[in-house]
Amino acid sequence: MTDLTSLTLAEAKAGLANKSFTSLELTDAHLAAMEKARALNAYVLETPDQARAMAKEADARLAKGEAGNLEGIPLGIKDLFATKDVRLTACSKILDDFKPPYESTVTSQLWRDGAVMLGKLNNDEFAMGSSNETSAFGPVVNPWRREKTGFIRAPEQDLTNKEGSVHWQMMRPTVEYDPTPLVPGGSSGGSASAVAAGLCFGATGTDTGGSIRQPAAFTGITGLKPTYGRCSRWGIVAFASSLDQAGPFARTVRDTAILMRSMAGHDPKDTTSVDLPVPDYEAAIGKSVKGMKIGIPKEYRIEGMSAEIEKLWAQGAQWLKAAGAELVEISLPHTKYALPAYYVVAPAEASSNLARYDGVRYGARVDGRNIVEMYENTRAAGFGPEVRRRIMIGTYVLSAGYYDAYYLRAQKVRTLIKQDFEEVFAQGVNAILTPATPSAAFGIGEKGKADPIEMYLNDIFTVTVNMAGLPGIAVPAGKDAQGLPLGLQLIGRPFDEETLFSLGDVIEQSAGRFTPAHWWA
Ligand code: GLN
Image (cartoon, rainbow, N blue to C red; front, top):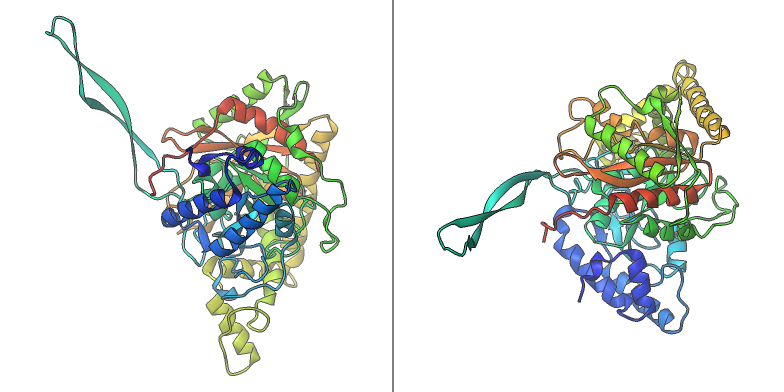
């Protein structure tokens, strides 16, 4: 029997429909895979009892012919989404063993459609990071490893010719792997690692500045950051409310589209959620992209960009052209200000959102002689260094005297970035193609130790999309010289995720799929 965890979500749906296997079998196969893959540190909480109970209920509905969009499909949930009565940590010590008495809207929609919860996935603390190294649970390991290629002589392959005098020994290329553990990207690193390693068919993520697209690119899978307002933020731990958006991860573009249909939708509990009908995103897969105008923004050709990324980008453009799309060079002149402006706006909002963790309402408390000291002790003990840095930057840029110089200016830059995109779309551009990240995955501990800016630079291609509230998808498109996956990003018009799925599928059909060698079990 095929390994159930290596199926795509669409294949699993089909197999459940024609009774090739049950949801309980799918669920058990994933729970077993998760147990063997604990070295990846992708899950911070496994919920096997809940998973099996949900799978049995799904099997009962399947038997009655009442299957929802995700009936019986095991998924992983980023530990930033509240799931009722299940520990929610945001991978911070400050939440301790907080168990929310409520369910996030996005997860409730997944369960409404029959999905099965396998557990909660690791992430950067409060989603602040690009490598999943700021988690209180420790770093997540990327299932990909760098290749060391060599040739070995095939043993016993003695191809003696007829005369028996000449021996031909075959040379067989072998791949050896460098055991250096690599980051899966962040902040949704657990989600990306779990999906890439076959520890769930799909996962939820959140993306404030790139936290879905960058880890998807680092692990060779697809990740979508929807238009701001497309998915409800209710019940998701807030980082920067005007930038945060939930979205799906999966191993194929089609699977991502299937998940998106269940995650999207209007929610009166989130005032920024938009009341638009949810399309059948899967129907966009395989749709012709003939005549579509694809913008190639010259400002994304950044100084010092590696030849590999240049090549990948050109290759992606050629694939879209071969599928009938038209390539046009475009300009997004304010791109270079996006990253600094993001690192003003995001910490400002974070400093306000994180004020609620005071030792009174949630989780951990460290006592003091008075209430102020209790706040201070709790927050000093509960927040990690990156979160403390963001709170300090945010408080600074919002304080009197600096507000105009930093915060207001950053908001103005944000408007200009948004206008850049609006102008390009007004010229008839349907989507924009860029690299997803400036490099492939790096080693755990390799970046950002001496200078946090080095880590922030990871988001150079992704933050503009959040600043403008647009949808963006990362699709694996190739590998670097060390055999690590690289992704391309497509940026779309507001609420036009369907075009991104159609174009993303063209890239996937051209590039093929990317699966890491299974070394961890
Ligand atoms: N890496 C970015 C940051 O640290 C984005 C994180 C995110 O999208 N949640 O802020």
